[in-house]
Length: 166
Image 1 (tube, rainbow, N blue to C red):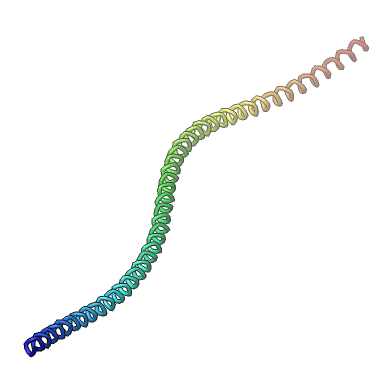
Image 2 (image 1 turned 180 degrees about the horizontal axis):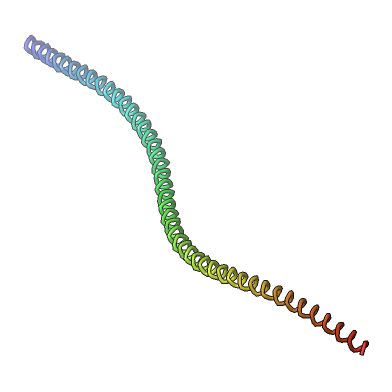
């Protein structure tokens, strides 16, 4: 019986040792579980902070993209404006060259007309001088004819007077 009791005590001690060992393992598993839960909580918090940070970064990126799009649109509008201005300048240059050529043609025409007008004026002055000379000659001829008529009238009067006396 004592042997049975020793075996029972030994068995009991073995069971106690195994239970203690199991309890140590359970405590270790519990500690591991608590650490795992803390790690999961920490990981969840870190994940949430990372997602929030990512969301803020995406918002900033969207805002920057919007500003970039606006800036790009402004740059494109400026470029189009410059292209339009260049085209307008080219058009104005062509018009200026065309107008310059037309102005030269008009100047040439005016010079020709002016030369012709001077020639016509010179001819008119010459004709006027000739007409004045002819008018003076005509006045002299009239005066001569008037004198001749007066003489003829005097002769006729004298002849009439002689005819009456005779």
